[in-house]
Length: 399
Ligand code: LCS
Image (cartoon, rainbow, N blue to C red):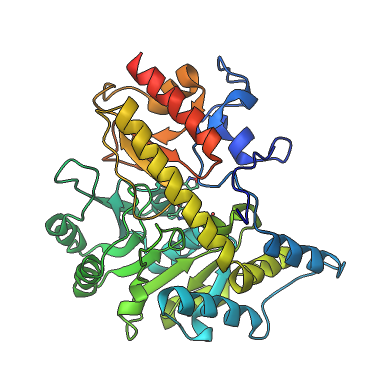
């Protein structure tokens, strides 16, 4: 194997959210919260980062930038970064966008917070599909605007989620809904929306004057052989779709806080230009550019490792937890598992698994709504760690 995804890397004492931030993030508790497991005994399958080392091409580019020794205010000048990132979107998605539409942000979430404020006034509402990454809801709350949820449906009960278009249309028709925050591929269900689904969704928004913020942060990490379609690619003439992509999920660089925001809309762009007063982190910029120029080979190897982790997970659950509902997601490294056959609806699932299994995971109402009895398993970890996590989860549910 050219890249070693089996390596277990010690992350302690790096101010790491994954190892040290779970009390606060999952349990809203302080560092005194006690568990029957020591922190280093937990199997961590929660926050959406990976247990794999960032590829050398990124680390090398950052080292070269470090050697320049001065880290003053930095912004993107010239074409190098645009060429690297648009080269990536062209190669992977056959999609390009004009340079003047590309902006960067210290994360997709900060951009969602900011853009929601530019697009929505105090009486407006944000629409989202649920279950949802909770920060979509927080983006609305942060701006003191209301939010409306359209529940995804799982019509065959097999974990393959679909959009309830009648419900979505009804909600989009509310004249106060001004913004739809879309997740493609979808966290947590792992759906990679088809062209037909994308078109139907977009057209409902267009018909109702709803702007779309398409969060495509997970788009690179899809199962081998699948194709992601950027929503904006389908509507090159539209200025109603803002696209967010980032190297952070793909290359495990969330802490570098660098993301791409593609804004074709003049009005939103002028507000962004006026108020978005953040410079770049020079190391993050060097890393992002290297990722898009040199990271493809590593990413394809990572995809294969994740594919295998999902095959392993599926086989393990079928054997040891036959009543759980799980299907290998089309995208993301997040498995969405219904354990409703084994637990009551009221159970606090993250707490149950932390206390009884020594596994940190997200689940239940952490995903806004429509997520009772579901747990989300982050499988972006060495296979040995995954195997131990699954063993512990299944033991607790079947004991
Ligand atoms: N958008 C989606 C759909 C995400 O899943 C995440 C991270 C972000 C944005 C964060 O973007 P950033 O601000 O880091 O650029 N998802 C996480 C999750 O599900 N648990 O922990 C992080």
